Length: 268
Image (cartoon, rainbow, N blue to C red; front, side, top):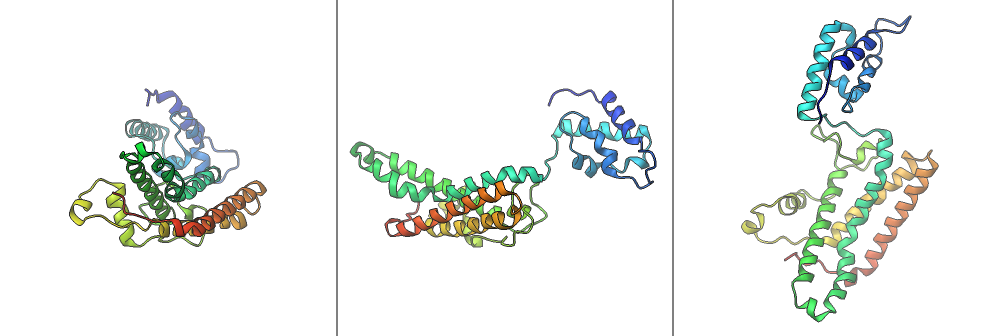
């Protein structure tokens, strides 16, 4: 962050906040009191201010000045705290959810379509390139399975404010584990981090097809909820989520038809 001069802007914010509207009651809105802080630099957000300042109406101008300056300096040093997504941000993030859902099919398409093209080339087949690409794609899809599991988890106190979870779309009733605790532990140890797991316990057999099917089932349910409930009164989003759901259903059905040709070797 760049340098900041706090005195004049903060003083103006304090003075404005202390000016109650004519005829207002004693228990006036904290939101109205803190709203002037939105004009301060570095994107200081209303909900962040509310979380760290006591009601302005209980403080003198000098005390407000001191507290605002202290918080501004702290945020300048450590960064502005993250905040939970707004309704508009959730709306915009639906496309990111669809992206994550479709990526759960990448290994399937690699195995059935891309890998045979590489192996048809004798020079490439004799090299390590197909294996390197297969391992990279397998690890990538496993990360998307991990993301899927975490997206659909039940709400807990340690959840990060800026992380998307299905429960943020209020009313979605299918939050909970997508994969077993054992599988999730292996995802964290073998894919999310470089650990001694393989050296100590050997390789782990990833059931990629079954994991993809479990992911698609949950994503399809989620987009059905968005289309039929959460965005039911928003024609544009309802149409978009309906198309996304149908797209995922079609992708899942195609993978099921092609399962006979699909195998899931343990990454080398």
